[in-house]
Length: 396
Image 1: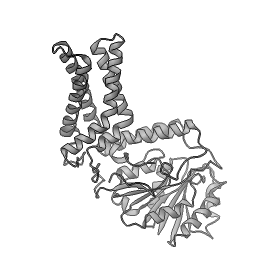
Image 2 (image 1 turned 135 degrees about the horizontal axis):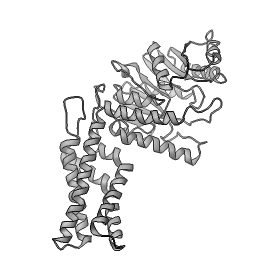
Image 3 (image 1 turned 180 degrees about the vertical axis):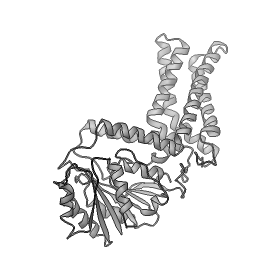
Image 4 (image 1 turned 90 degrees about the vertical axis):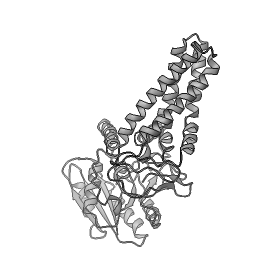
């Protein structure tokens, strides 16, 4: 049976249409299903309209007093669910219910545990979004991947609000969501082996208003930090930052020593200092940041020392190049050696921080064994892949 939760907040105008279209899509799969509406609206109209179709469709309605959060509404709905497949979809029709058929089809593969409706794989998109909204969406997803790099590094649309999963994904798992991004909670705490992303086009809103505001943005940030702590990635992040700071000092100090006391020209000394700092960072990260632990913390499953080193160097290449370029430009502009080198190191480090953190951390996971993170993540490592696209490593 498929149990689909539809959280609602002041969506009386579209709830009947959403339920009927979802029922048609799920009916095409040939499986039994139930639609669980969890309503936080101030009035009764949305719930009443959902109950109005109960004589035609397998609809259940849970009424909650006051707006208490989309993610918690979904969790409450899953607690009532009777299905072996659990899912969620918005009621405002921005998620086309017809995508549900393809999500169910994806889960016909016994090796797939989670099927996500994705805007960011080939065939998906948000055609009516402005450039600003697209950039904000990308930054939001990328930031999540940076805070939770082993959880989300290869998930194309971790912010999706429409997905299906096997009920076993939540077996023995206590979900503690905050805000509105329930998929983050599921992927970070759940027990899953592989994930498939199914493309869809995000529709313009027909009824209601956006739930996103300043409060939701703050909750999103707090939620990420909470998950980083729960999965052990926060501890690893602290070690990673300390190693990076030490590498920066090594870079600047070695360059100064080579030029001041070794008589080297800056152009010759710079690559040596940068590479020595990279090797130092790699060695300390190998030994400290991504070491294997037995207490539910971060576990390294690298494919081998040399392979990991090559992956790490390749990912850091652009940042290192920016470091070299910025330092030389500043020296030619009259900056002192230490000042120019410090700014160059900061620029290269900032590039890696903004764009490369997920890939840097993946250097230690290996091409077939992403690390297991967190107290609740105990099943075998898996994959994330877009339907019709290349296979990408995911996180168990």
